[in-house]
Length: 406
Image 1: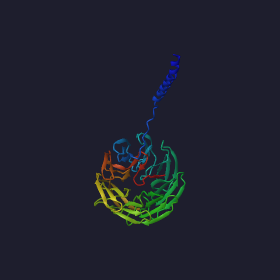
Image 2: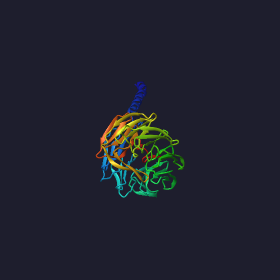
Image 3: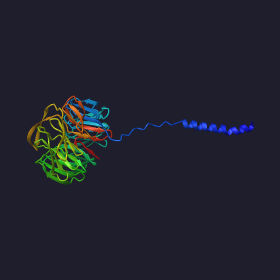
């Protein structure tokens, strides 16, 4: 018996040890569920406003409504400033500014007596909000609307952009000025002739701008040095510019039936794109251009796609603008040239191969092959161009209306 006990004792100990090890092996620690990281950016939200004073935020891929906000008669003509945190509308007519949480639509603050410029969007840069009025550039805290600073500017600005640490504006007197965020002026450029009423194009540290007298100029963003200036008034004048792959695109502001492309290297004419017969354009609209194709919405609500290289129409599609209700006086300097009747439509915004625009009382999304992805009704006529926010926090706007380049 003693011998047997001695023989089996190590065996029993070994079995107990193995059992303990198996018991330990069966205890599997709970692993946290990994959060999926999107492999590519997607359009998330579209922000716009109508002429009834209603703000809209829709889901960019479906058109379904995320939130709306009704103001007491505010009409925000300039597109909103949009980030992942804030959506800010400013209205020059009522001197009102509203700041919403971008995703919930909750009003974070609203203030009156903030006088903004009619054509200039608010600008969000590094958690600072910049708003211009006729004589000042004001800096606000977007969290609560507190005024942090203000700087004098040359009166009557018409655009405001941020490029590499500089706030750049142009004005009715033909000045283009860059100031640092502390208000110190970096440089000032004077138009060869005419005023600056529209938005420039910005690319590769060069800013391109077209004057009311038809002078197209290229200026170094950092130094304000003129690189070249060319008279293109025989083609157009006073139009906003779009830059893409070495070309500058501008609508025909003389006959209103063409779009031109000029060389970004010297201002030479390169292409003419004819609108469909009976269709027209105006100085406030800009095309969207990418990958050798250009997309433009005419005054009559026709969305047209062109080949940039051969100037051919690739496809066209009609949308209802519900008539021309807006009478706009067109001036060359102080001289009234004519009065145009415009419909309610916006520039085309191209974001991740989808085209977003407003026409009449509807907001649309169309892919680059002309397929309508969705349309959603508004309570009033479209009043400001859509702004698209992506899941990665990127923002797509019409041309360089309130563009931020860091």
